[in-house]
Image (cartoon, rainbow, N blue to C red; front, top):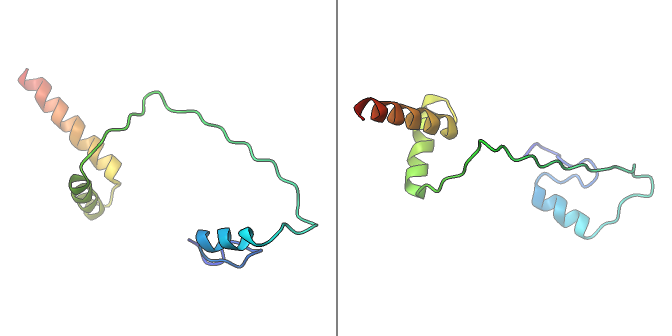
Length: 88
């Protein structure tokens, strides 16, 4: 987390920010804000379970290659599917 993430609480972690606001009220002159949360799930995005030991190894290799674990996994799955399609 960035240093001094919260300008009011002077906290440096999300936990400290939470603890601060558990015991403090908003200042009288605090600006009013509106939060808009949009949730638009990608219909082409799927989640799959992966063993934690495999995930750890995947992240290690991906970090070594300078790419995300998700990118590396997609590359490997595509390569495997392409090679499997050639054999069938």
